[in-house]
Length: 254
Image 1 (tube, rainbow, N blue to C red):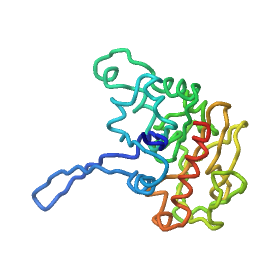
Image 2: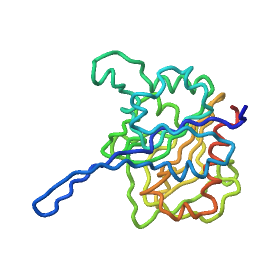
Image 3: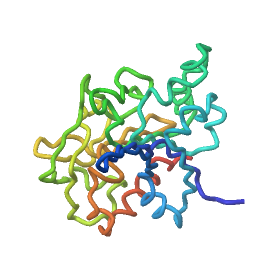
Image 4: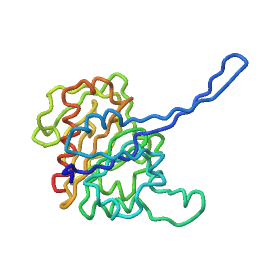
């Protein structure tokens, strides 16, 4: 039997459509994108067995019972809006009642599971406020609170990362110099949370951690892939260690 801890990564996928006009003619294409490729690659030879549930799958297949989530030591929500988890197709298409899966996640955490949110256009409050995690059961679990509006901080010039708690296990052994980030979600630190690292001129939270007794929560408020996370991170010696440290801390009690 494998001793690897089980992680459920939800999100990090999208489908884009394009219109191509060539003189008189026009045609359309669609492209499926997976933003978790590099994360999954570096985690493949670690102590973690990561199951990736893309956004388009999560809408219908994300578990509706806390017991079904109990197999996982931690859940990562990354660039997937609250509506995807909240509104099942049975409700959206057929007006049927269905369990509130945001509350299901909260029950899972209450029972000892841990949760992490990674930033993106559909994380925290997100682009145009569409991620919509403010005032949800998920926000109550996090080490940060969400703004009531579009929370993106776009910094194409690059935002510096500053470690403010070098003793925290999440940043243990990481290089002193971090590559810049090209954006992040602006959030507010929860009073019960520990601030580990900041980003940008205003030193907004980048990494924050919260110990809730029998469970833990963690945030990384920038992307785990493009476009906010530039390719420099993939070559950075701390890239793999950062994610392993995050999961080590999250699952320390699992």
